[in-house]
Amino acid sequence: MTIAVRPPDPKKLIKGATGDWEVVVGMEVHAQVTSKAKLFSGASTEFGGEPNSHVSFVDAAMPGMLPVINAECVAQAVRTGLGLRAEINKRSVFDRKNYFYPDLPQGYQISQYKQPIVGEGEVIVDLSDGTSFTVGIERLHLEQDAGKSLHDQHATMSFVDLNRSGVALMEIVSRPDLRSAEEARAYLTKLRTILRYLGTCDGNMEEGSLRADVNVSVRRPGDPLGTRCEIKNVNSIRFVGQAVEVEARRQIGVLEDGGTIEQETRLFDPGRGETRPMRSKEEAHDYRYFPDPDLLPLEFTDAWVEALQGALPELPDAKKARFVADYGLSPYDAGVLVAERVSADYFEAVAKGRDAKAAANWVINELFGRLNKDGKALDESPISAAQLGGLIDLVADGTISGKIAKDLFEILWTEGGDPRQVVEARGLRQVTDTGAIEKTIDEVIAANPDKVEQAKAKPTLMGWFVGQVMKASGGKANPQAVNDILKRKLGLE
Ligand code: MN
Image 1 (cartoon, helix red, strand yellow):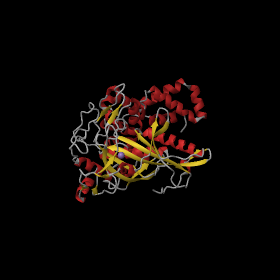
Image 2 (cartoon, protein in one colour):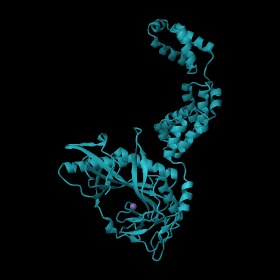
Image 3 (cartoon, helix red, strand yellow):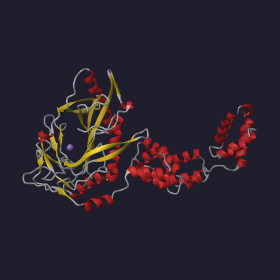
Image 4 (cartoon, protein in one colour):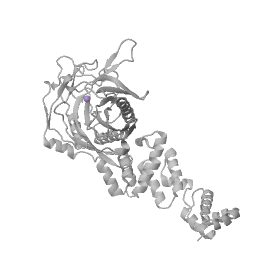
């Protein structure tokens, strides 16, 4: 059993009726390998086909069929291992994990038991308060997915869809290094980001490409690990957090009532906000693992691994560090931008040759905010990086004010167009003609003699005048010029 090395963090403890408890969480994540074909057959892995339309004789376990390893799936597992800074095992073994289930026609799952393809690694997890911590990865192994039983198609019968049968999965097992629901969510978020950068799993949780089995136990701070329960197949990051929360509370309740925790597999019901028992936990020996006689041990060379390493993309941690060092961004902003490869690329296209902090502000606050409001993804953004860059240039060279820039943003969002042409066509240029500004100021002053007197006694009232002048100019007056002239006219210099 692993001894956790992180000391208890008082802020993360849960208060029970009899004192504080520490939550301990580890995760087994099943990530569907991005690959056109299945792990041991040429059948398609495409999502959403007619039931049983992507099934080869191998996937259906017809007598005499033999599995043939898909080299691309192996490469994907190695890439993932490299992305998790893990040890790559150049020799690994496929085993049969024996159990009966109607959606498992072989009567066993081909998996890896004692010699997985990837050994120990780590994931650096970033929290919303800007701190980071490391989660140990125990192993990553390749295995087949099972089919799916359909219970809702017929009143008295269940059907089986084998489209998923034989699809390659990477099971990524973490150490019990997580100490709260937030940490569990942050870990899965980061793992998903890394997989998506690597292109080894699309991370689509709605389609089941990424599912988490969440192991939860509780203990008194400083005590050895408690007995854990495994919450099976949690299919959203939000639900992972909720499952940790309610399962920890349940276990604390049982222990504080003098009971004991039975090691078991449980299901999280998001509707009722509770976990409930599924089955008592089976042990590894119940599966009668043995090396699959139909498959040779998997072996590859250092040179092959090095070639894969050399072709890896820049990963989120390296990109974040570069954004902080090269663009002067805060770690938080850099973290937001690198969370998805597309957003990092978009930002870099906007920032190229411009003030990077302004670019980050526009991308994070205005663009992401607007995308969120409309429920759009970045690749559906009506405003391209070139358009947003053009808008920022107009602010930088004084053509438009910051306020008009926001109006322009909205015009580009709804109607499109070249930013500079839109500004010219609509007369949005900032008025820097001091004569014109002076005239507007004189009008405002003439209309408000009482306020002028008050402002002389209370200079902060100048803000009210600035507002009135900006309003009268339709937001187009250069704010600096307005301030300078107002100060002089009100005798506040
Ligand atoms: Mn598994």
